[in-house]
Image 1 (spheres, rainbow, N blue to C red):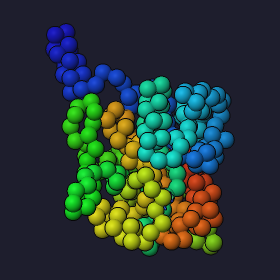
Image 2 (image 1 turned 135 degrees about the horizontal axis):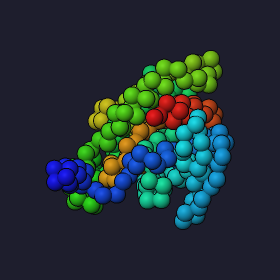
Image 3 (image 1 turned 90 degrees about the vertical axis):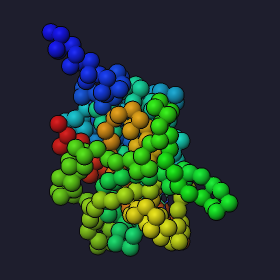
Image 4 (image 1 turned 120 degrees about the vertical axis):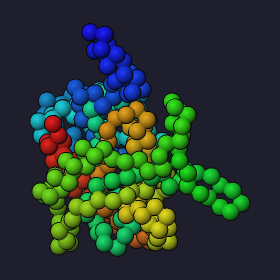
Length: 269
Ligand code: ADE
């Protein structure tokens, strides 16, 4: 009995956190920035009911037989962090999946293609001095330690995403059959419409896609020990045509991301 108590204490102490985020009995949380990114998923839910917290709507139901809660975060890192926090506090999800669109910053990515985010970085958090701006790590307010510069998607979710990616039925765009690929995603509070910025993000961080929420969601999940993954489908190439392209392609891109995310949820234990 004594050995059991010591073992239990060690497990709790090692986890460093008594709050059970990543709760095995909790739903899978799925978030996207815009209504268009989440409405497809919400429309697929069976036995659904919604709740409102701080004016934001959270729809819970069964997706591919799995208990999920789906919400739109709003655009940008602050809104994404706020909605993620509300979900963690009120739903205790066992994992969180981000579904949405992104700008592709390598020429091999075309609208409709899907990126499984291996790692996420907030490229616009850092230090400004007389030499300019340098990206640096965020700080965890709980431990007061530096967070990692790159937040890594959970290996168990990546494994499921790769499996789902092999079979996903994605919508073609202008005769292009979308591919599923994986790589680093850069997050910042700006819509990128600059080929020069794409080159910089690729050279500095090896990023292949850019968006405005993923790493903020990742930071909250990392700090609260909730496994997460970010899935994005390309709506534009973050260049001077980005504003035009996003209008043409965001619906198909949002649908392709939702398709893969729905398959991932279905494959989760
Ligand atoms: N989301 C979709 N396209 C984007 C872009 N070009 N920049 C930032 N976020 C995006």
